[in-house]
Length: 237
Image (cartoon, rainbow, N blue to C red):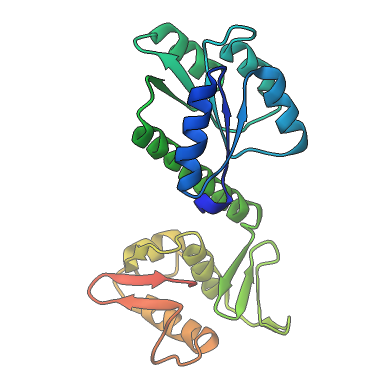
């Protein structure tokens, strides 16, 4: 996630700390909102979303652990808890209640920013993985789409490209190993066909046939590439 698109919500009763974090993080491209306690935090979340919440545990009216308890599990926004130095018990309780990270006071601004970036990276990766999982029954091979539910390869115009059973199995194996180099033994094992002799070169023949169907220039493959001396790599990008 780009910092320019990330909304950080700071919940702390100390106005000096809120203003310091708003100024520091704002200069680094984040959108930053401040709340003095649980009521203001909930008001903000009722009209907008946050990408990360930074919340002090020790606040006079309603402590951070109580606020966190009221948020979870309905609100899954990542939370970084600010704790008193050496307050191990509060840190443990906060993590058990669903906090994502903690940082001791006084706050090291550079470390806080590093923690925020780490959380945003994790969220971005998780979101991408979830999107891929939700559409995991389809895989792109250049202009073609492998529909694993229907066990079909479809051209850009929606027409079906004829595949043998083993060609389909090979495409399925490649789709499940995106960006990973597979040697011949791995391909034989995962696209299992008992009639194959594991010591022959028939895997190369199948891949050559697939390239004639998928690649714009079969002699210069870009989708299923040869990694010399190792095997083959499926690179949909």
